[in-house]
Image 1 (cartoon, rainbow, N blue to C red):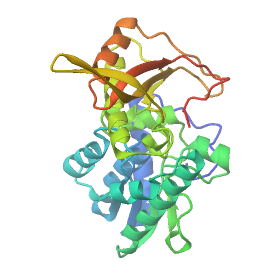
Image 2: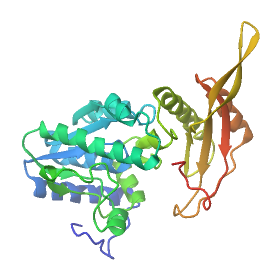
Image 3: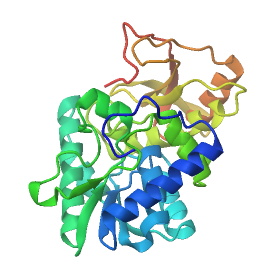
Length: 327
């Protein structure tokens, strides 16, 4: 399985037995490639990098160095989960970097979506490179490249967190899941013992909540979005069947609300939270599933308790014409 081209004879990994065979094979290949050298990995907490981390921990233990950069744009509880699963449960050699202030300071006043993406991506590379420069003995770089990345970008995962690292950090690559499709990566992750909410983590843009906090990001609006997103995920996950993806966004607009202080109504300007849920098989055509009105009302009643929020909307736009994300 070391070729960049997936063999036609390669059996789809759909069962625990096949996943175990794949894991054993990859552990042997990693040991043969790496030996007793050290490997560096940018661990985002997404399924691809998490499965790679779990595989490498089994293969080389403390010789894997994981760097988790918290840019302040992750969903509620995600940094804590990375620490709990990998450091506390798997005894990983994990470096946690809280760079929230650094990212948000750079993003202050920036409203153009592409500029935000470039700032977030560039700053991530800078932070990761700075952490890597502090380490000694690193000779390999692990990446969560999967087979569709190779098909779409000729082997270069351009949208990956560590794409475009400075030349001095272009170590030899270790890519143990590069011949797997996403569903196969999930099967392997389950067998490796990763939690379901990590294995079945929804698609999440590289810039994180940075492109769901529409327009110029402010800390208070970002925190409101993080809380609202947690509510939306919690309530929709209670449904018998969940959509392919569900989240929320906060547009850069305000509307009039009313609150009661000592029995007297006072008008104020607040934010609207937009709930988004979609179904798709290829991300080209996107449909909007029905959400029970009772669930929408439950989410509404909880979301309007978030400071600064006074309105909840449900986005029923399909693709085409709308895209999945707002930015």
